[in-house]
Amino acid sequence: MARGRLRVFLVLLLLFILACLSASSVQRLYYLFRLPFVWRKSSAYATISQERDHFDLTFSSFPANYSTEDAGLRPLIPAKLHHIHLGPNPPAQEWLTARADCLKHHDSWETFLWNDTNAPQFVEEHYPHLYDMWKSYPFMVQRVDALRYMALDKYGGAVLDFDLACKRSLEPLRRFEFVAPAAHPSGFSIGMMLASPNNTFVKSMIESLPIFNHIWPLLPYVTVMFSTGCHYASTVYTLQTNRSSLRILSGTSDNPSMHMLNGFVNTPLFRHLGSSSWHTKDARLILLLKNVELKLVFVAAVMIFGFFALLVWCIRSARHRLSTRDVESHLQSPLVKPLFKDT
Image (cartoon, rainbow, N blue to C red):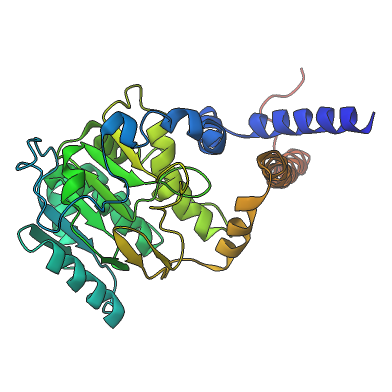
């Protein structure tokens, strides 16, 4: 009986929330919240495997001087390496050391370092319709994230976070059109992405930026993740009608988290310093929810949004009542002359 009442309450609460939101907001929320429930099915074919892709996920069989072309494969991703650092503070020394390791393992690749000098000019020149939005992002990391997609779209190659120290070359991954490592508990990480230039999926991530550009009050971590970050990119991935050329780098059956970049980890490709320099206080709460059952997270999210929707409704109702009262008192004032007189 109690469960039945709870279900009815949640359904009514959800209907109330939907009534208070615009159609576009409802659709955006639906796409974002459905990610954990659809990710496994959406990425089943995309996950790189030895059986289907004939690819050694441990990378141990690829020599240091491995060449995609010499192996008889056509490289779809150009040999270009991108790093991004925006903001007034210089990169930490450990980040510079990590980038130096990557440059050493990719000495024949063309390298790019995007900063406050060349990034705004690049965005304004190649994506003028997004320039104002890009400049107005409230958090620096949003500009960094959006710039990842733009650089990959224009030039292709690999874009890496500054806190990834390469242990070997990314050359073996150039046979694919798009590659990103799996994230926990769902989606993929944008800390490492490889893509061919003018990639359809990358273009879709850029075109979707205005649609998901929304500030979540008091939740900067959620704002970033839902507007430009990993959750955003993974959501756009699930909306693709054709994902046959997209690849997710996960791991072997006995070690599926082999390539996940969570915290201070060593993967076959990187030493991840786990800086998470953009994480704010609300990130701790969100990260704690990763191991909580999805149904409970969904119920909690519905209740939270229900509370805020109710608050907005109360404020709007109060304003409407005050406005109506002011009009009535104004009309009843002896100083207001009637427009028509009874004859």
